Length: 200
Image 1: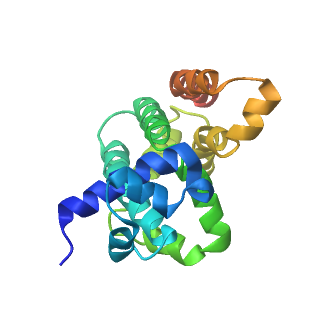
Image 2 (image 1 turned 135 degrees about the vertical axis):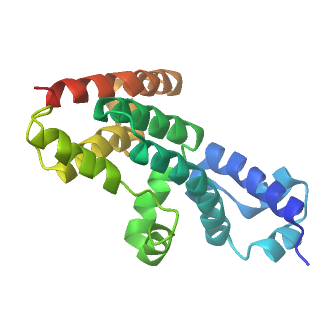
């Protein structure tokens, strides 16, 4: 019988190693050592690194999705939703920096997993947000822009720096600490620039 506390210990250990080494650099032995168990025990719970990473990902995803859905479905205005979305998403990735590149890798190598987590019943549902944008456009409160394009622009501005992190650090000659500081700044910067760009 698998023990839930042991499984949680393994997942926490995996997060620690994935954050240090990334998906490619992490080794199952390192995760076992971090969890203070032997490698055989680790393989009893998770057959391989891919399965373990998917479990870690789904655990993180299930924390983010409800948070985003609360924002999308709330009764607050579009501008405040943009501010809350940007801050929540960037905070999430700063806490889980190994996820963006994993998603890109899985999109190319394991699309079945991507389809599986995107078909999860608790996945982020931006429909209320898109509907609200349409209403604001019709009311003349924001510029005419296809709602899905608006959402795509918002996602692009928040996601790309994390996917292109290494390139950005080299190009700009910045340290890990400075990159993190810039991402903290973007929580406000992106939101306000975005709001200004759609305001009438």
